[in-house]
Length: 167
Image (cartoon, rainbow, N blue to C red; front, side, top):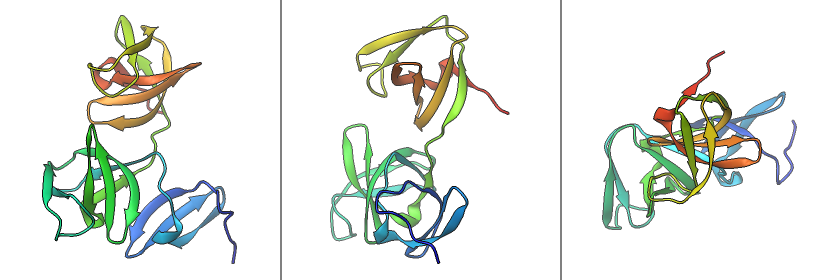
């Protein structure tokens, strides 16, 4: 039986009860959910989902998510995920989200000049721009926005302005 260092980075394949199936290089197996800290993790609502003010149904419903809504998963709290979407932070049941791994895909800029912003929305500051046909690394998806990296520029761009390259 192998073990992981406390700061090891793993790919989460799926959740099964209180366990996560993970992979790291050639090592694969299961670890308990309380042995995992989620980092750069996105979840997608599998159906309409209530967002609670705390980790439990005894807390007030502060919002609801539509099916297929993407949220950032901040941490695990028992049967619940603490999530963030834009300025909203709350809790959703684990069985209501499917975890996505950071995308780490490639894309090509389709816009003439693409503004790169410091957040996922047009209200965020422009930190740089990229010319058409620039290659970018797509790090994650948030609703209509991608977090991308191109050389020394990292930020958010509208997904309509980047075409994913499929291999």
